[in-house]
Image 1 (cartoon, rainbow, N blue to C red):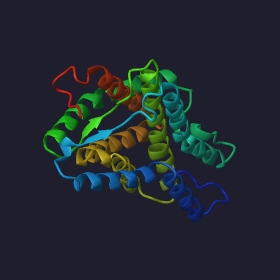
Image 2 (cartoon, rainbow, N blue to C red; image 1 turned 120 degrees about the horizontal axis):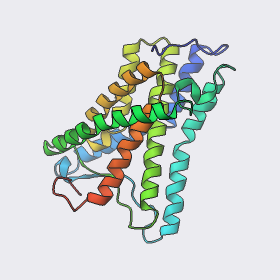
Image 3 (tube, rainbow, N blue to C red; image 1 turned 60 degrees about the vertical axis):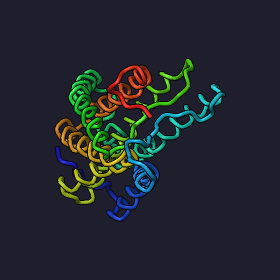
Length: 263
């Protein structure tokens, strides 16, 4: 599958270019800059990277579970606003395009998407964990703490929602939308693949060099699969499963097994 599709009628390339930059500035492009600043801070902090922690899914209001839950749900919901924006921008392209269906994020092939996504997650999951452990042992990565929520009834449901939110945001913006727009702007398939993969790696740089490289490689695989299947649905499933296993698995296993590093 080629990324290129005809530019929306009446929209010059400069408008598409500005639109793409705005979407990225409101979402994962900004996260990439934030991750770079965080990584510089880690590099200039005394002590090796592996002795520092990159914490995800922490508490917003320790000791106040209902307020904390409200903040967790608010954060998850607002993080998906760029996806709504992308859906609106894709709908603007014409009557033949129904929002996110243009990039294969719909309910037309649920079982195919689920099966393909599960296979991709199974293939990437073990390799990704091994790479992380090796990168941390070599001193190229921080210790990643996938969750540090209190032991309350909503802990695991929120972790699952967070995983789904991450997967929808990243795959819709970084794969489906970005590849489509770069193709319309005349980028070559190789240049678009590099841009998407480097962007994915960039907003994981807060984890260290290992996080950057590992996610960039994952980005290459995901772009190639998207071009083969023409759908981001399986990628969303795969990413969600990977994050669910990481978040929930850490919550269940941290401190109970020797091979899992903890902060």
